[in-house]
Length: 152
Image: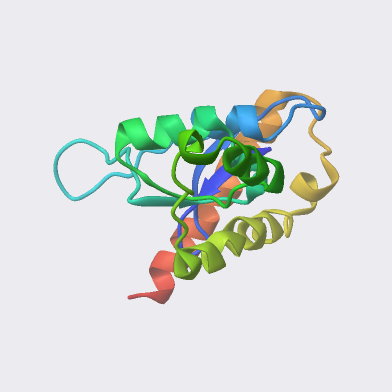
């Protein structure tokens, strides 16, 4: 299960893959799945910023964020820093890093804990990917409805 969450730990997008699939290649499909409806007009598909851990620090992911005008809050891996420094002036500039936004990257982990409050999701009783994804969407809808009710 790969997902995107907003600041109040509400789900924005789900992508299911086999258990051995890595996180980094799923970064772009998860971002493409984000669609937030507003009061009028088309759904919003581009977040202002994306916070992630070092697993998402690939050049492909950073290029995608830059092309869409999304602020990436993903720290550089130590080997990437060393490689850049080894190249000297040709290595380019260090990646900008916003420490305030980076602190909020745990919203995804907190959302996963909320999703797993449903036993069927936590234990993966559903045998087909379709039914498991349906359970994720149902639980996500409940999380959204509960959060909207608390702000009334």
